[in-house]
Amino acid sequence: MPISLPNLFRGMILLLLAAHVFYMYSMARTLAGTIGWSWGTATIAAGFALIMLLPFIWAVALPEYPEMYLRHVRGRRRFERGECPNCGYRIATQDAPCSECGSAIEAPEPYRIGRRTIRTFVLINLCAWGLGLAAAEGWAQFDERTFLQEARAVHAADGTASYSRARAWPSDSARLQWDLDRGVRSHGERIDWVHPR
Ligand SMILES: [Zn+2]
Image (cartoon, rainbow, N blue to C red; front, side, top):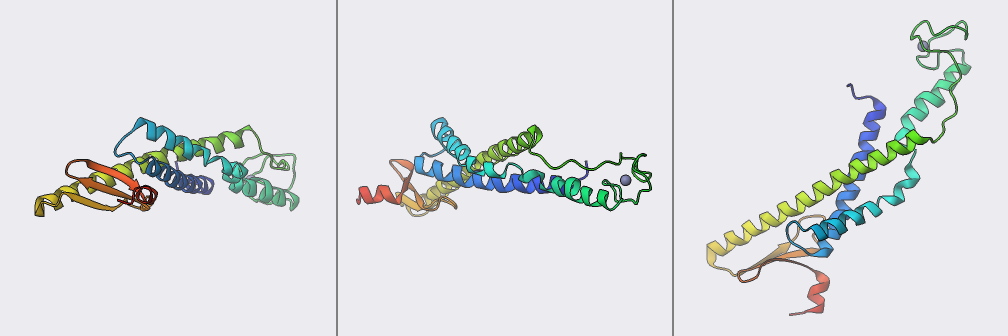
């Protein structure tokens, strides 16, 4: 299937929403402070990311903007100029189908938000949600595994029993901490402040 302009546009919206989900999931997962896969954390973070998609309901018609223009605005303009709404070919009569593309010659109906609009929007949001969740969880786990490798390397090199660094973006407000006796933990600035030692 060739990539049409409307599909490219919808793909871009999907990626932007997925980036939003990625960020929101990462924030919630970091606040939960767990290491590795956790059903509880994943459920809460996924639910949070889903709720944070709700404000985008205003954009329900956004994925159909290209069609709105191509079919409804441009189509009507062509029809009023005596051209085929579909291909722009100059037409002699409105009674017969267009001799160039074969589509019926009739004035395009005004754009309306319908069931299809809502279905498309929900589908794009669900895909973005799944994509964003998977990417965020995978990224966080990758960062934690990398951190553990770093800690082990530091420990192997000079016997250091503690190692710490910030989590990878976008969770870099929290830190990962490794101790020989306690393993890997995650903590944010606030926990440090409550327990200054
Ligand atoms: Zn035509």
